[in-house]
Length: 493
Image 1: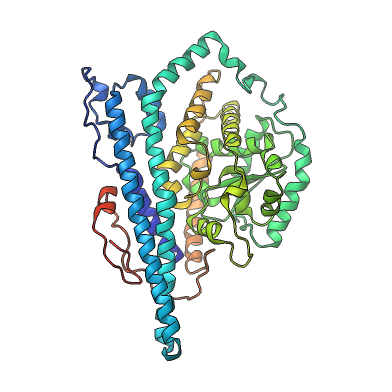
Image 2: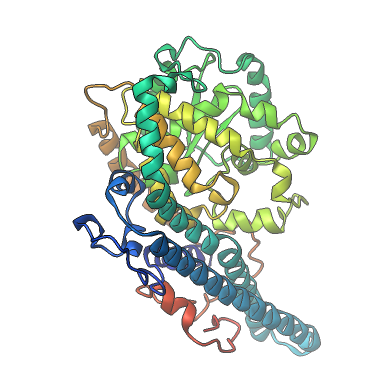
């Protein structure tokens, strides 16, 4: 069931991110003659990567009316799609309530087979209702946040790019915070890094004792490769304490740093990265959290300190916003079963400022290590456009606005002194991916049928018979078909 729901969500959300509502796009033409760069409809540019838009935007000529029209179309599409899935969630809840009442009324008369079917119906409705809620409250709004951010790049980046070039020309960029990049390794970003080692070790011990830290990937060559990349970046950073690196056996697209130089990458992150510079960008970002002692600052709040030690995934949310998987997101919203822990995500105090700081330092450390610093933007773009919504529905909702984050990273890259060449891909990375592939296949087979954080109380249930979508469905079709009443294992249309 868990695997089925994961794949179902993957397909739905890929569709949400690939297609845009056509209503209102380009309905108001610019009064200026079209240039070759603007013969493409505005909405089509929103499907381009951020790095492409940074290059293209200064040459595009869309009128304010066209921008406003496209923004209105996005807002209309978002409201329509969110409303639809909220309706779905409401209908699932109504059916769930009815099924539970029916079970209570008929419980004494039910045989084993009918009782199992009733349990399966209730379980499926609960899962589908939760999925619809996450789609409505998180995934769909985040998809449209990403599209609006790309529209912001088209509208606002040309002027900011001109300003950035001016700052470079007059040297004023050197006075920005942490502008002394040629002194990386000899700076003190936050004093007292060594004081975090004990706290981080205690956190890891408690997580292991509670069984909340996934096991490590057993292939030593993969561990050694990732460690070598991380140690190289640490060597070219402002980290002043030893770095301990572990690759965890988990499908989550995630990496997190615990206090004191303890860095954890999950298998899903290695699967999602397409080249070594992307991996390096994420590692550099995580190392930056330890350099700036962000976790220590957050943990000064008693509520965070008490939560922090209870689950590695909570630490992920605190430190990075975390690419928390959809199953875990249910747990965060509805409580960690078995632990009696109910969370309000707002209490975690995730700091958007800390994320921007880690982005800036991460770009610097990737650059200092010889990697293409744009690898971080490429990976972020991929997360924001495709893979992140499969295994990371809560990540971006706790982070700085997409536009602010992407623009800040791009400006920092432009401020970096030029180098003759950067490392993007290596044969070692490609070899690691080859070794990882069979490990992933074996792990996915083992995970089938295992309980998720939302408890599967009745094993052996058939999955829902009909989903919210078909694999080739556009977002317009997904959200425009008329609603109908669904059976317990059948999504409403």
